[in-house]
Length: 153
Image (cartoon, rainbow, N blue to C red; front, top):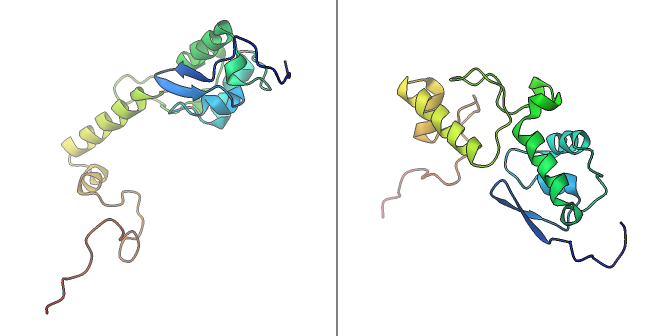
């Protein structure tokens, strides 16, 4: 397992959930390359799938990767608690889910569109490109925006 010579089954780049994952990293940290999977969620998924966390991602068999992906797709069936998931009580469906890769982008876009449509404060400020969560904006966050008045010559 910890040999210096790599076997023929070693993969340097894995393709998981439309994301290129580095095969040279340990499996727990390699999974964090997928959008929507952090270190803690990756840790719990590896434990539920009974995958050795000392393994490199490229050393994992296809069956182990399949187990990992089924747990990521259906975390509630594997007794991962609701508070651990990144999409809790979805607005439309009322379901709890762990969104990954393109699912996150579409859900955030849909949420912002809904907030803009109902003329919500949060939706309007995000539309205007201003800070949304109550931060002070008088003196901070001026980079990237036009500032001041053009001087007369």
